[in-house]
Length: 272
Image (cartoon, rainbow, N blue to C red; front, side, top):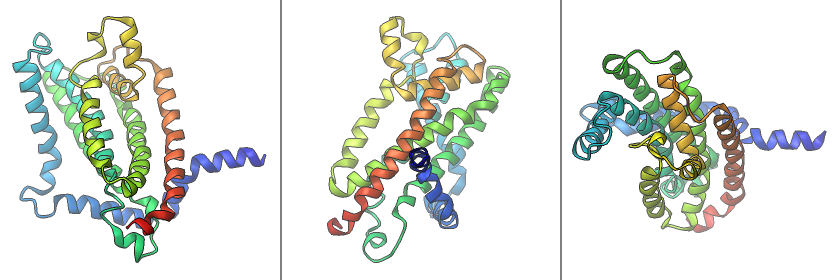
């Protein structure tokens, strides 16, 4: 019985910690969102403009200049938008994770502060971006391609484990970034490589070799992207089993990432 309780406590520790300090977390998240747009002439309008401008650039480059999906028109653009939403939901918190603790030395050396809360606001900002972008996706798909399948209502169920995966890695990278200052540069390069290894500007249908398809599906982001596309269009995707395995894995990774951060944070003050 104690073993079962211990396992549940391990899995729930990241969320229990956040819930107990939910007021602090709420203030941190609001501050993170406000700081992002403070001093900007267009303010929160960038929540809409940024994904549209990014999508336009990628559509012109990959759809226009390189000719990807030229025969599919706006359907290709819609599919690419799905890939961008999922990938950015993951990469946005991960790209900033290694500087979360280093950029706030006062939280470590002078203030008694629950440092494990630091990754949550960046994930909240990524969730806000993903939500706005998903609404834009549904509007664009309806206007230029057709009414999305009713399964599109389940798109948040795909985005949640992606955000959780970003949170899991953020705890690890935030800790490693304190001890290894090159972490941010390494993460930047890895994310650039990962972008092209994920089916963002291409789809699983473009991979004809069965072995290569199986290798692609070892990438959890590929599962999320292809699952989101299938939900949007009502077509066959990787399958519920792959998605459930991905969601279960992210819960485990969140517990491991949180435990790793808590175990290593005692040395932060000595380094900073």
